Amino acid sequence: MTGPGYHDPATGEFIEWPDLDPVPDEEVKPRSNGAEPVELPAAASAPFALALEEFIADKSETPPALIGDERENLLPATGLAIIVAKGGKGKTTLTVEATLHLAAGVEWLGFKIENPLRVLFIENEGPREPFRAKLEEKLESWPHELRGALFVHTLDWGAFSLAAEAHAANLRSFIEDNEIDVVIGDPLDSLGIDGVGSPEDTRKFMALMSRAGLFRDVAFMLLHHPRKEGAQDELDEASGAWGGKPDTMLRLEKLEGDRARLSFPKIRWSRRGSRRALILAFDPETESFTVAHEEEDEERDYFAEIEALLLEQPYRTAREIAAPKKDGGIGANVDTVKRELEAHPDRFVAITGDAAKEVGRHASATVWKVTRPSESPESPLEVGERESEGDSLTFPYREVRSQVTSPEPASSRPDSAESPESPGELDWR
Image (cartoon, rainbow, N blue to C red; front, side, top):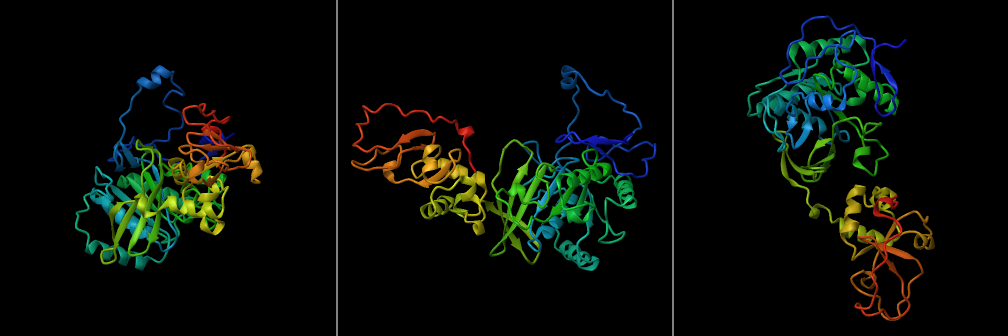
């Protein structure tokens, strides 16, 4: 017989709640963040399911975003955000400043904070005194009133664990008694996760946070380290199987000249789709970050980098082009590389099928090369020029066949044939 828990939506596996002291049966106060108060009754007090029309009609008020707005909700009420950065690259400094903005109800890096919030900071990395001194120094230059509240966890400094029953029970009581809106945890891997971050490990840790109130009446913002081996996609850089878990994932990268790059590999509740990274200016005197500008194309000339790579190493897939520099790529997001390739059909040409096999690649692969002007769909092949047999693809995936004789005049050429594969079926590996 199983105890209370939840079903993991990805696998259908039933995850039991950790064995904690039961929540006492008492009236729960309304929450300042607009979330429904948490109760864990012995029996369900609501229908197990509703008919579609009843479900649609059963509207509930959506609490305002803790960070952001309806258009771009960076941290939903009761949601989960993870900030990823290497050690010593500024993520604690960035988060301390974000915490003060939350407690003051002051806009942070251009993101709206509608209400001053009540925040609990759990610092598990490093000794207590340097962190205390860091906060003291930061407050000396802080110009805003903390209209919410900021608490710092002190019991068993550096050793808090959600896996410890007493710690988890104390956290839950503190959240309820002090109406905490956001729990900041630094670093994630010290807070009670068991193992190395496998899918099962992360599911169990999510259950621990859920027991503490995540997704019901309190949000979590966790600081995390990237995987040592790196990743092609920023979303996969967080160590462990975390990609699908948070509502938002942020990645901080230290740049030269007191600059940093804050990117947004995932914002689940954004109507913008994706957003450009922010280039931040850092003031060492006040330990504060401000937005210098959004990352523009001139920050990195992806066109030139891709062109240089393909001139030296043609017939690479988009993922191979995007691979870390140590693996022969340019070290970029694969979606950025795809967009750049697609945007310049006059310079980059894709081949697949028999043409890919002729250059030693699998027929299902889509590989890229730099095209000469004569290979562009806008200019015909020069007289007498020969190419290997096979098909090449240029966006919007028109089939370009090699010719060995002078081309027909443009007015007499038939329309290009469609590629046998649709763009969605092409292999981007």
